[in-house]
Length: 450
Image (tube, rainbow, N blue to C red; front, side, top):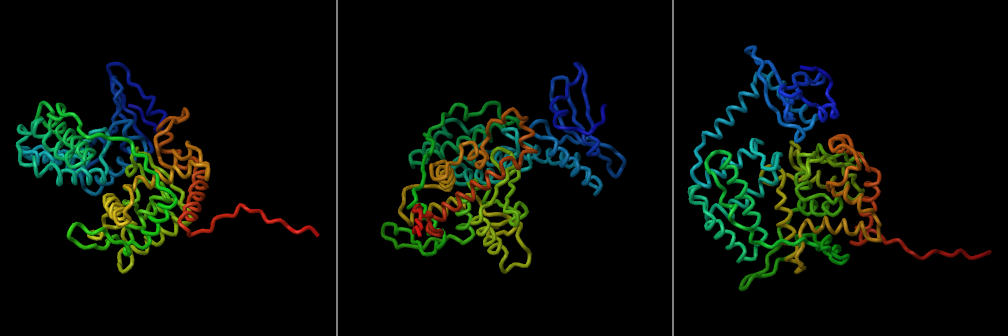
């Protein structure tokens, strides 16, 4: 057993002697240790003292899916809970026992246990805990497309033919991409059933994806941007086309959702990142937004410098979120039903769909706004480098020889100055396109010679 102030380099290089196990205890975070087997498996554990004097060990996670900073944070939380009289290890065992004791007979039973296991992080299909927005989308797929047809079937009755029937029904309706998403959810849930010893084979393995997916290339023109921006400022003036034999109805989009959609254009962020924006992620005085890794697609935190137009919109969003309420919401875009929860990403998609229908425009989605902004920045109008655009989009890129853990935890402010310039230039161009800022003249004034 060795005791030291752990570093990322030491953690990555730790090796155990063949036939033995190595434990490295961290002096910076009492109770935290890295356990290394002779096969190279690295596990984070924490040892704490309970009220009755016991010193149980609690497994936090494995490296590298859990880095050193996260392990320190979770270890500190576990010891803090122990000081408060709790027993994290016993609590975890109890949750697992309760989940396993729950009878899984039907597909509905399975999905209930599956969603709970994913929510608490017990089941991680891709090695990391599912985001709340991902689980919300999966629950929507389950309720709308799977439960009505297959929910009451016993697991043994969920056959490839039964699955194909659901997928084909979606394809016939022109929803091929949705059918692929339904298949993916069923595959993961039934893999969970195998892990719970309820099945030995996954029937989805014998069902091919039926939907055709092509990469979208929709980029809005200047005229479309101006039209959409204007509609987002005054959505109440829009009317949805009348169905056959019906009448027109107004578009019901609240000012908070309309503001969030405009921020998608100005920040290049993903819809889930904007929808779930927390007040404590923002520093409007420094015009910056830090999105934590648990809310990004690739798990890396990202610093988003905010342009002046974005800051103005966020100040308005904060006002709208808290106006008339004594207690401020932790979210910039709280749900109208529960101020302690944010709006869902789907709310942005539904609003964009209604705006498109009211404008009778070709199909576009919130993600197309992100693509449009990136394309405009890469064009000769701004000439932002593809590398920098990749940083703005928080895409996983080449590390240039740096360790991935270094980029994840210590390079948050890399290219912050360049990103700020690029986003400010894009914000200015966007306001010019939508008519809220004068376009610079390219005619030079000639002074009269004396």
